[in-house]
Image 1: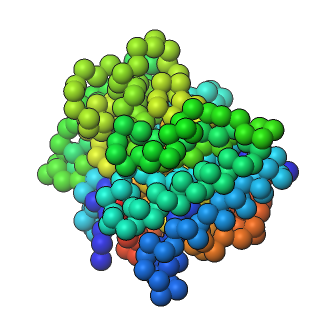
Image 2: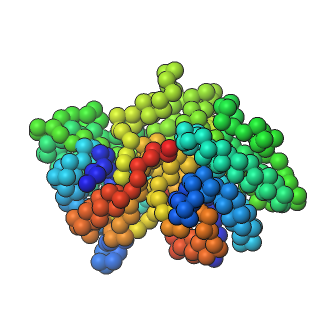
Image 3: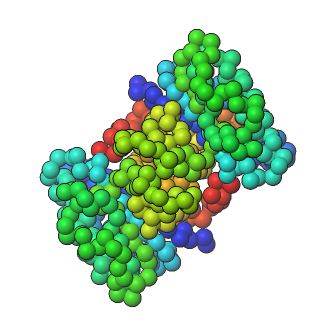
Length: 213
Length: 213
């Protein structure tokens, strides 16, 4: 079976999940933490080499304060939990904005935890504009664009899995997603179960990989 | 009903269509010309303001010569046919490569045909790297990225429709596709029928539009 080297995760639907339970929207975010760890362990098990989580974006921070606080808190917790695993972990996002949580500053240089292993990238206060704008500042003469953007330590994504039914990228790593295969799970992220992951892998296994050729 | 302002078209599956008919792969491309015109007329009818066709990419030109010749010829014909309609037409792609067909040079500045109307963009020898690399050369101080790429005359895409079952962007306008909703038709492009288009519109009508917010 063909296993994607790098999986991108768009964990959408937390607010809709909360509403469906009669809770206020911001209550959905901390229900997304356990799924994140479960998913990491599944990636480890099947031999995925790199996984990127779409934590929150600069766009997202325009939401009501209680939501912003809740998703920021959930991301801090998720990163702390992942740092207990065997992995090499990096948080990527615009640290020069007050929306970037100080608690995650120590993770903005890649660090090996435990015995190392999978590369984990966690996007926090990420913005595609911030990512690409770096190209304007690059003085490199190389035509390798991937090396000259802010997220240059994140490699090409083979498979993107999005929970919550939306069929769009919403600004997720535009350069690394150029050739990604895109699998959508209709269930909300807090309702994650491992069948979603295996469905995505089985589907990916049937796709040809041409990289635009 | 909510009509997308700008639709992107990825007309994939021409080669698989030809193989399915027992023809050699390159025979599929000219079967994609009539669908292109039909689709244009449907866009006109429902009030779409802009449509972008993914003609061929720099990546595609690495295919066998007879295929390259056939898809280039099909794009030349398609553009000539569209120039008989009421529209404002622009061909976008890397003209500095020998893979760019001379016949389409006259279309590389936007021109109004007939009574004008819909903006048509037709990507020919397009490359996402070529598109983004322009950012490196921009001396503008603006942080509006869309204005500083090669395809700056093409606006944000609301809905992308891809024929041929693949669920990926394959390098299609990465900046304009950041927030696009993505609809996949399993049928091959030469088997286009208007139900595909209406299915895509009906689905789009049920999506919320948040632009990442």
